[in-house]
Picture 1 (cartoon, rainbow, N blue to C red):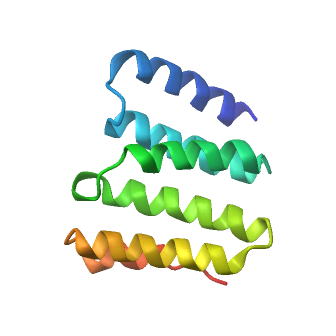
Picture 2 (cartoon, helix red, strand yellow; picture 1 turned 135 degrees about the vertical axis):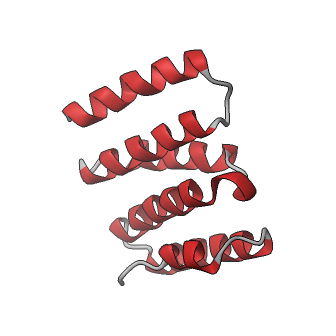
Picture 3 (cartoon, rainbow, N blue to C red; picture 1 turned 30 degrees about the horizontal axis):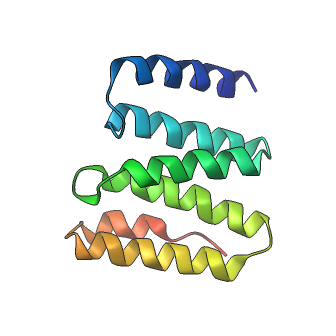
Length: 113
């Protein structure tokens, strides 16, 4: 919980310094989403990861997109929706592939079932 508190504060500060959609804000949102997932706070984690994904463009933020998508897929699995998780991962892979992202980066979308 301490990590989540620190990340929330960091996010608040970054939102005051950077424009929406910046790497600094999106990366912090993804990190907070991962911590919230680990704490079992699925709704908040999902909202945070979704907000980060909405702001990111594949050509400049492929790795954070992979991390955020993995968090969202893990949330879907935790909710008993493995098919939706797989569909989300596949859609992200296609989006990244279409943007010309290195296949080694895209490979990190694979999550052990």
